[in-house]
Image (tube, rainbow, N blue to C red; front, side, top):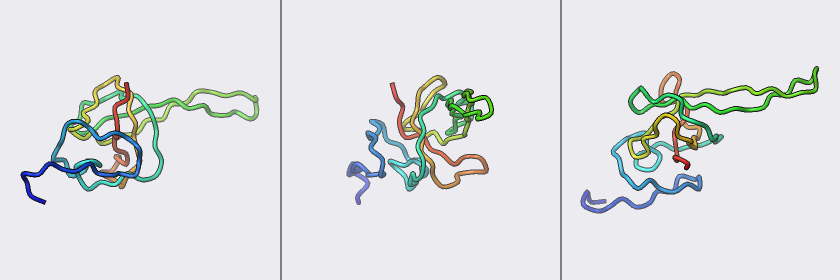
Length: 114
């Protein structure tokens, strides 16, 4: 492929729209070689201070069989934030599992949801 040609839309295996911006990030699922696989989650970005990284949090219900009730628990994970998506604090995002990118990063942001 010549450098002057525009990149084609890449199929990543998950039905999400391609970002309008492009990037040169090697770990971008749309413009790089990273392949998302496994589970997907929808959560809120609570921190985006580190470049190309975010912390995503979502609530889940946990059953307490002894008391026959549920309680709310939170899950927090670190996710890669590609420059073409660039999610900020407070954004609702779709994240997917991928290969380990660092000691604690095993997820990548696929879409900012409005």
